[in-house]
Image 1 (spheres, one colour):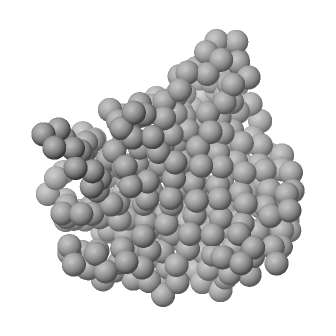
Image 2: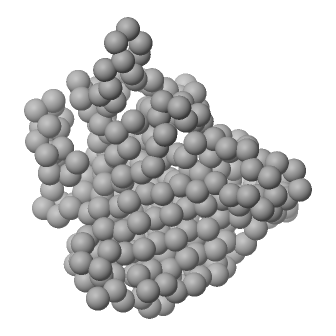
Length: 306
């Protein structure tokens, strides 16, 4: 049975707690919305929680005096391509929500200056450790906007992100496109560049940031930590879709405190009242771990979670 109720969580204020008895999700309603908690019932939260408000950005130059963007943690929604300070909207306002039979719809206030409005619908499966997260960005301003729905799951330290590589036989043409950010080192010890998978394990002892993207035609991405795995199965339209950051539908970032597993929709130009929609299907797996990276170990993991 699916149970929904308001609760408070740490110092994030009011949240809507959602559970089907197998998994639980907490979605913030005093801020965000952020999916601030995600785990099997009785297990540890997989999401990073910035309780100390360590990660902030001053965005007063665009959004007004005193305005600050807080990372908070959990899954947030941005519009890609990234641009500072426009992308870093200070989402600290209260969120409206509507209860559904199997979940809820969370609607943020329209963003001042950028003209977009974010809505997140979370629907739990009745008897499976799964949920569907449907995210939309609506243009509320007069002028058209071009962008992509960008879902960033900010996940706890020590976890590993595993991304399957494209497998299409494209003959004489390439089937994989990688994007590397200026601060990314190809020799970074946190990375594993395998034959069929790319994997990154967050390491709290490494302060340097790292980020890569890929044209993820398999439409799957996984995060493994604390004996659990969170797998995102998301909508993609490769090779015909046009994606941000030179064709990236999936991106991974890590720093000293957290990892981000990010999925992106196609780039669209939307007029006032139009929206871009991006769907992720979340599945949680219990009693899962990955001690070391190798082609063989990731093949065995894939048999379980992919």
